[in-house]
Image 1 (cartoon, rainbow, N blue to C red):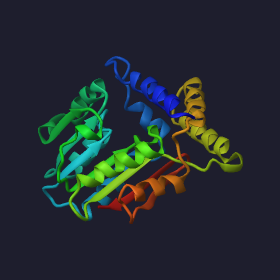
Image 2 (image 1 turned 90 degrees about the horizontal axis):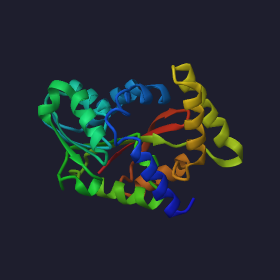
Image 3 (image 1 turned 180 degrees about the horizontal axis):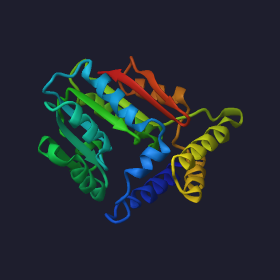
Image 4 (image 1 turned 135 degrees about the vertical axis):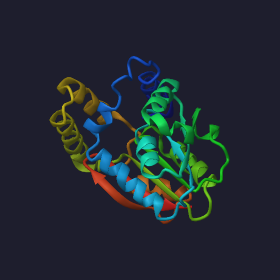
Amino acid sequence: MTDAANEDSQRIFLRNFEDDAAIANYADGPRRFTPGLDALHRMTSILLAERAPADARVLVLGAGGGLELKALADAHPGWRFVGVDPAGAMLRLAMRTVGAAIDRVELIEGLIDAAPPGPFDAATCLLTLHFLPFQARVETVRAIHARLRPGAPFVAAHGSFPRADGAAERWVDRYMHYAVASGADPEQARTARDAVLASGNMLEPEADLAALREGGFIDAELFYAAFTWRGWIGHA
């Protein structure tokens, strides 16, 4: 897929998150399409807490919707957060999702360049980086790395699965069947399946790991794998 096509697909995707009414039931989607999402949030909390202090300042890139913000804020009442997302409607949803903990959260509309320079004690980017082609992903990861204190943890999790020798269709079919078994509309699940299969930005796990390491997280390692999803932990 060309860079221009990738940019077009990203714009189309973002349009799905620009309307408050359209995202009213957003929380249902990630849980139906991402196996173990709540467990992923708990694992992320544990991994960050290994090195983040009790009063940590945490950068959350792709914070729209607020699911991971709420999970982390509930688990760590002393942490403060900066959530960044390009979709204003999703940030408004995040504000409602976070609830009483919103006084510990600053929300910023934009991409990583809109984030404060830090330094942050930890960072996350969940269900987001698979929208970026390889080089843009490296640059985004590098920008996150530059905003972290030395040794600070970074957790990334997103779409990533084997694609060679027909493996891609096998894995996206499993992704689809999981969503339907979790309550997703079958037609919606098939549309999502086709979109995932057609995406040129969802990398194989080896390429994903290479992007993280090229972006500065040279110790990045896998901690989560669920059908078409992978998660990594690395340190600045």
